[in-house]
Length: 479
Image 1: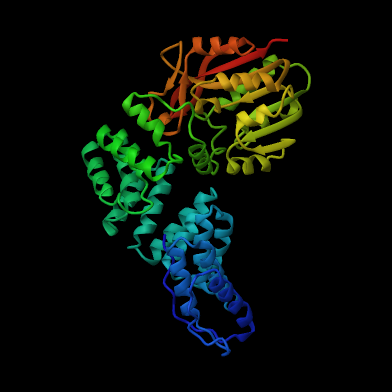
Image 2 (image 1 turned 180 degrees about the horizontal axis):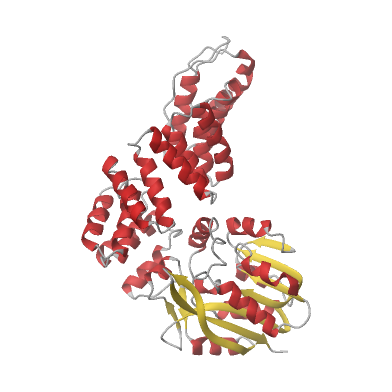
């Protein structure tokens, strides 16, 4: 998405002149050498010049300066569709899709015939999990302009997320036909082609997308991951390595994927940056279908184990609480129920359930370190799957538990019972997941002051309606 073009209108409303001039004065003092296109002693100013300068700021990544100018325009002309739209784009950039939705709605109301405004409205809706409204907005954009490549691409991505692959494939093909430089649409189409065992055409799409990999902000890790799915390890490795150079914090999990490809040493855990980004995306749809037949079952396994072993009301920590799926199931067992998670987006969803006494954003290990002998039970559904070595986790959990306390969690099993490793599943590896052997779990538990109360292999979740096993583990701290 890009800011829409300015329509070149003027404004002669001098009642907003002082405010607008103060914005310009602050920007000039900060070293941003804006040259007003009007004399400050005159009562009129040109909105087109302000819009052009704001667009230049936006392109340069100076979002605060751009927003100030756009808001100056809105002070003079509240229904300016382009200013509302472009502040909405800034809101999207900083993760405030709720604010973006309000602004895009105003923009569409002011200029309903502009297809690009409907595309942006759809993007805000999709980010907020309003998928039906997003699809409606994309289709309205296409009704207005059947050759809007962004609308086709976004619609295709939405349909792909719903597993409507035939319709998604059609939309994505139209997107790349109209805009051959739409690398996101090409990669999404390649994913579908790989899943349908059409590797040759998938590689054509990926190679075409790779020609744009030099552009700033190109999703190098995503391209590398899809090359890996297409069994092109050399190309995958090239782009994953470039992704780590571009993003040393590893917000896309390139390090785990590289270790999977190379068989080399794996990071001890998935990066915080990757987890924050991954679960910001997953927060939108994490709860959807949790009660379906082929749903995620980690929270159910943890609940069942807690009910099996718990006596009386407990002080409980939900470690990696996410959107609160576990908390909603066990609140009746708790005299105190706290949740901690790295993802503020997941915590926002958990807060809406109003089942926790306290919710905390931050690193799980550091949180447990600061809570000595505070809990009767710690539960962790699909949390430790993102850790390799569990020594520190077990030791800190033991420290945060009262004597006799329970530590109940799920992990993915591996074929080597004596150790932990990266998962062989590409899909799980892309999500920063690890696997753990039964003997490793028992040994590490014993070394950390626990006895194993229960350890069993159960269906943890489903991928494409196929069961994926996990271990459900209950440890009890020595009294």
